[in-house]
Length: 292
Image 1 (cartoon, rainbow, N blue to C red):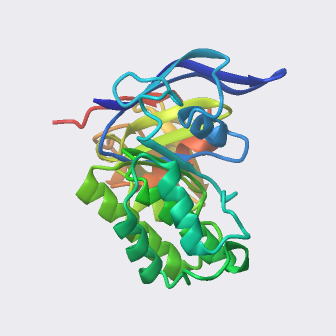
Image 2 (cartoon, helix red, strand yellow):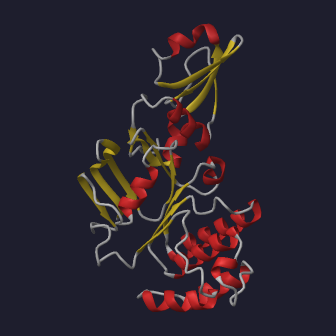
Image 3 (cartoon, helix red, strand yellow):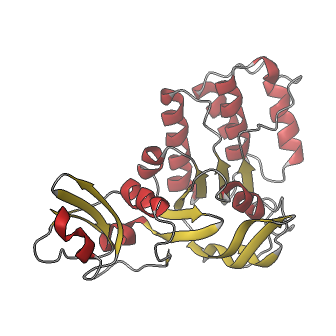
């Protein structure tokens, strides 16, 4: 089953296209890294998935064919961004009570466990929590809903490194134990690289890359060779980016073997993502298979 299916998905704000002709097929069970520069359309895509926006054109379905925001998936999809939807004048314990009454699916035990683990005082008003505590409280509310698909748009930006690691560990536990599918947007690619199994790169409102991380790592190499031959390298393999330092060149290429005269080394997800972001005109990739 695909958790996300999009065909020619487009969204326009007046005369500006935030997303244009996006095609996606994301299988369930993945941790999806959503990467792109500011203005690439990441938040628009997440809000479309959450049912908070309506597409201008194209089709979008979730969890095997349901419309975002419809009653069929309302309990299965949770969305959280940097603007935490908290009742600031209510104590944390009362916010949990409100959340339990507002949601058809609610796990009070996991909510209490997370509050204790993250040392969030139950009797303190949400508005008097630190920015990091507010972020963790909002994440607690999202996880306690037990969604099948969790959409996160930079929700941990205010957390310190230790809290970020703890929050990510909690999310990975939910992925492993509950079969949660997760779409996570962040500018910290190295953080996403540790957990992601699927990569989506948006550039200029279009999908530049959409594939499993394994297939991308298996189909790209870093090539090292003479700078004087860099111009001819593209005649032998599809080159994404080339950088030169003195007499040597380093290229990111879509290939499984280095041409004669070039050394090779494996690449990282971060190198692939940055390579396509630097060259948005590179041929778009979607649905790669891992080479046998």
